[in-house]
Image (cartoon, rainbow over the protein chains, first blue to last red):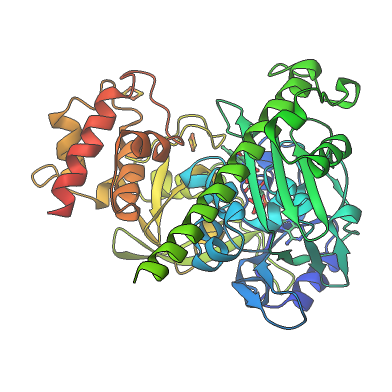
Length: 288
Length: 172
Ligand SMILES: Cc1cc2nc3c(=O)[nH]c(=O)nc-3n(C[C@H](O)[C@H](O)[C@H](O)COP(=O)(O)OP(=O)(O)OC[C@H]3O[C@@H](n4cnc5c(N)ncnc54)[C@H](O)[C@@H]3O)c2cc1C
Ligand code: FES
Ligand code: FES
């Protein structure tokens, strides 16, 4: 790793200023992508701007303003913090399950939501939740829809020096995320997030293609009939998918259907459990 | 770059290529000035002589460099010393002594949870954090909790037994 100038700002403005003044600056969040990349000398910034002291980018809260309650997560929230947060578990439980499945315990103790989303690794887990749940991405300059944010492999709508400060998730009616993890790194070889939201069924796919995308064919089939068998005959086109030493494009396309069906099965099971709970509450009320 | 070949460039308001960091290592206050690109494992091994923290892969994969940062397991090879300002670091040397082993260390010995021993300090640090975090542990939770640690010798079975054994003792 080449040396660099180290900065630790305490405010967003200070961080952006330091970035602008640097010859070739980089923000540092959890460092669990950036530090390994710098060690391999694939990245050699002149300046590292450590975001960890910026209070305004931390914390997990519920926003009560507006008609819709949103879950607001600061960009610096570590994966473990999201996985174990009672607010996340009660509002968007799929997100806590997803964060709890990233990498390993040590990675989850350091890596952050903002770092993962800003990095836009084709195999990262969080982008599936951001796109599948129709989250809003808030930066130091503007608020972006998930649809506008992910542009391609390691490419987002963030401008040079623009800081992702928080991500706002609407509460889905029901959702599940299922991934086929790379057996060594646990990154998603293919990961599918299926959600029933107030603007319909959404299906987001990560790991399969250069960047996360929505599977329109699956969304249409599930809108007609929300069942596992509705996806039996749907195979996403392999032509758009990644092929590497871990899996061919054809195998990834096949995995998309299998993972989507597992996610749908999980949602159907959640719905049934909820229905049973309601019935037993009603029964116990009428017998008491 | 090793900590020994540290840069001596002076601090400036524009950030600095050398950093002075105050932290606690195994309950002892440490103030260290080093090149900004020094990683925590380098500080521990080369400056402080705490060679129990092993470097296996140096690429964030194997977990043999695992230490505790404010009580939580982290990979020391993937953490800059600069990020440790104010942190409390615990290494395997801070866990127990040869005469008074930590229950996790004792259980690894009792259950034959090690062969060559290279992965062991990292395994033990990760396992102690796991026991602290989880109210109950079964085999599946132990295996998932140790996904960040690779062992090339034991086949993991005795490591899982050791962690389960230690968890019982630590809770008593
Ligand atoms: C062994 C291992 C296994 C892993 N497994 C998985 C896995 O299974 N699934 C998964 O999804 N990920 C996995 N990861 C990646 C991990 O989740 C990273 O923590 C994450 O991708 C990057 O987050 P970070 O906070 O560490 O960011 P950093 O490494 O600090 O930064 C990454 C990039 O984002 C930029 N950046 C950071 N924060 C911001 C911000 N707020 N605004 C603008 N730009 C910013 C940085 O400048 C840098 O370019 C793994 C990593 C390791 C080392
Ligand atoms: S040496 Fe740090 S993870 Fe392998
Ligand atoms: S005991 Fe040899 S690597 Fe684990």
